Image (spheres, rainbow, N blue to C red):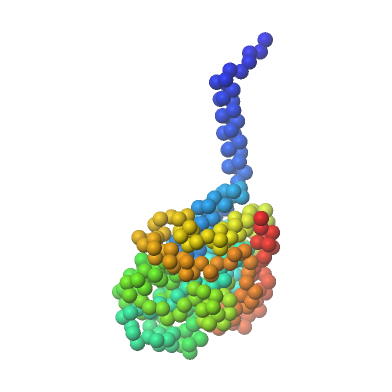
Length: 336
């Protein structure tokens, strides 16, 4: 006669079953690696926020966020298959197409660059971009979007590419040090670096692109900037996974649009405050309007990006670019 299971044996069996189910769920999660162009920057905040809010896991995703470091080229990593996507500026989608490489924005995170051209207080003679002729200008890296925008603004001001120097100095502490040491006389950077230099009085704003209105003044139109972009062929082969990513990011964008800067800041790692939480919150409150609320590409945005890149880049100028292949709204419009 078969004995009845004791409460202890039954508990062990149920525990084992729970472990098996948990392991199966973990194995079933879609593994995705995304490189972020500095996830402590406000412009790329949605990536870390989505992780913090648990939105990736809620979609059955196992997302690893890699912080792009010095000497690392996010695009090359993506095109080589080391990462599946990049949270970076949409303008790279346009630039890469002219090189025969097709990548597309699947979620448009922002509609303004969130960038500022800062001038060192050591150089009061600089009043306009034209006054930076012959000077060294800090950018995140050569080939970065900060470099793209710097070159465009200088050429627009009548200064040819050969008459100023773009110096890669990164962001945060390295950018600040370069300005303090007068290695750069001006430079393009984002929050929270902007607020840190303004607070100490070591720099002032020359061109502000943290809002849609000021971006239109500087660049002639809405400039879609931060986005999640991925190789087109990978997107086509992994649509269910891309849809889950879009669901998570769109939900995050809605969180940003419906919560205060203070509430958002509470969800971010404390070291992102760089020792000044109040300044972090203020900068976020002033700049969070740059984010889209739905992940959709703003109308006319791709055309502005193409015009900007064509204004200085030999890679883009005179080339035929199919803008419809640089982004898709399929996933964000189907987002839950």
